[in-house]
Length: 270
Image (cartoon, rainbow, N blue to C red; front, side, top):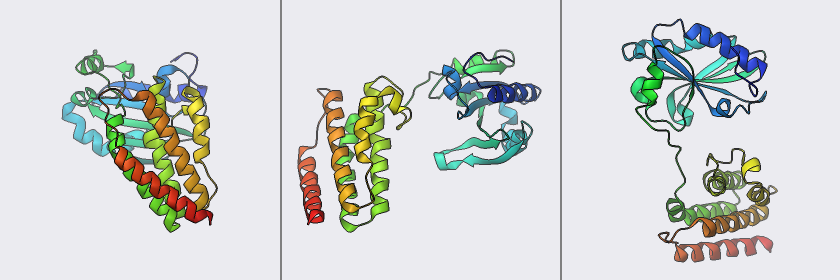
């Protein structure tokens, strides 16, 4: 099967084989591709994200056999379910050589209604996947600035406390959390891109990405304090550009937390 430009040969070969095998399984009614396949901007490092429609009466059986199904699609090196990303329905697979990361998600028709994006249907039986998708609308979760503001200053206080105590690896984790849960999503939202953590922020929001480089510090308490101060500055800028009239800042918390950060930073400088 030809998938057009933007799909590497190894990915296309896997898809051709997988669709031929999955299409013969009467327990399945369709296969759709998501992720970077949709934009045809795949490269050798891209994953393949597949949504596989399963007949209601066969779902329990397919769930039990999904590792066996995965093994039949190629030279499977490793496979495990996605509890660590909050979705046990997901089977994360590594095939190779060449090494290829493939995500398989086995869903009933009613589970296809709620989704973050519309898959491109690669194969379906009697229009079943098209019909299932038509019963819902894709919605990618959007960051809520008010929700973030209500929590942000407590997060900064927590990070400041870890820096002041000298828990340096925990301090780095705090900064990574702020980049992934606050700065990245808000920057991408501002640019009209999918607010998926810091994914492709260098492409969609290069100005903010350059600012965020200042939140990558040396491994010392003093460096982490300065990096945290930079993160707050980036947040304030994004907040100022994205806030609506209904937005309610938390000035008392902001003032107290920033005074605490200044105290810790001054103590570290001595």
